[in-house]
Image (cartoon, rainbow, N blue to C red):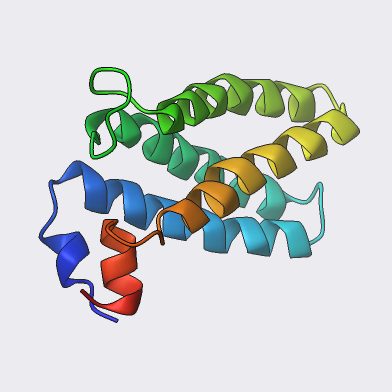
Length: 132
């Protein structure tokens, strides 16, 4: 395992990857920790900031081009940018079940499933994890 391929990439890629890795780790902590507490809310705001960084930085990444400079993964970024404020609003209005569902969907889709696709041969994270 070497971070060299990631650190040698265009600036948006390491920002995107490190924010995603931090959001994944923090998300696991959030799912395991007690809900509704001050630490949960504080870490939740940090997680939302990380996910905004992940989604926004993706618009400067164009390794996969299916429609001009865009790929289907950019639709996931639009989904994330749409659903994050909705999830925050649901928590703010005490709609806990809806908040939970949206957060699980964002975590699963934008971090777990999308993260697994970064391990496909030829992608930068494949080189980081498995070598060139």
